[in-house]
Image (cartoon, rainbow, N blue to C red; front, top):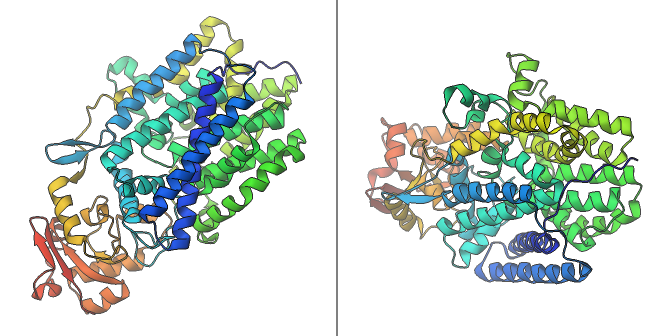
Length: 575
């Protein structure tokens, strides 16, 4: 193996230790809350307090262990390029997460269009679990269906909500904490090149800004969108999954490929084992990479202790999230991914720009130099990337980007050291410009706040509906119109069927349920039989229902409602 230069990962060692400790503590709090809630039948305030206490205890112990292990030296100071990369990450994260949810004119709004559909769903999960729903819960968006979703970060949010937090405060603060951890972990994994590579990921779409003079998210119109905007900000699982996965990759690279110290074995085991509760795609990818590196590095003995720690929590998480591995049926054959009819070469260049040529160049350089580490890093990452152009891992093929993201991040350090760092200053500057310009324009454009008004909820309606629903048990289903931000769901009350796009994208078959719900709300046939089949004892009737079913006879409304107000009315159904 040749003397491959290592990426500049000079975040001070203590900062890295504190980050690893915080991510581990948060993961332990998630695992403790999940296990205790399963044993007790629901999440309760005292269980939440115990989970947070365990997480804080593990955090403090990990910080102390890290300081003792690194007593030989403090690590290098940050360089100028690192400071600039981390400052850009901090500034954009403050903008995006600081305005994740904010109040204007009696409504709660969000800044980023990608949040418009995802945020209400996370809000629903958090309120549902925090309200005392049976655990492991049924999904609150489809009747009689077990939740098949790694809700770890939402569970942690529910824990903090039960302990007195407010969602309008918790969601931004947790986003900022996840962003800080992710920035440190990215820098540790691949230096400022990896930080910029994630923050400014994109292809060539944004080059249009050079002749249009307009700054906005050009990447939103193509398949390979800004990873920071389309995945990290709206999909809350990444707030913990990204730093945890990056810390694992860094530690395994140190131990399995370089024979150098990494994270403590018990920290590795906990981060790895709890990942299925947080993000199943991340768990699958890092597990594959860990296996390849163990085999390629010939370090079985070094890997076994980590596996021993991870085995029980990982088994618990996988079985719960997949409903006993039933969710594996979501994987299917899908040649071409999202290329469509525009042609493979045009699609690849427009979406990925220089990334793929640079990755292939790095692979060629690694092969010529017989660089085992680079080959073991690049080989599996690019192989999985190619495989995802033929296999889908979710009903919506765009969701392949949830794994493609990891292929991209894994390959960045090798691209930086084997290709970018060896270019002369002029070509290097040009390569970096083409690689990052489109993504930078997109992230900056999305942070300017020039988009449409994106209303998550109207506060008066939300408060009135939540008061009306308060006497109901948190497992009682309510028949409502299907909307992505229906106030009944946002109050944490499970609905018969939520937004159709959420149901489909989660791999749930809602065809029969949605048909029955339509007949019930339309007042057709024996509405009591339909309600009984749907396990619905209540009907909500508001502006959304009136708009969707204007001709409904509303036979359940012959008597007085349980509650009513400007927001509508709530009726009890007698079966």
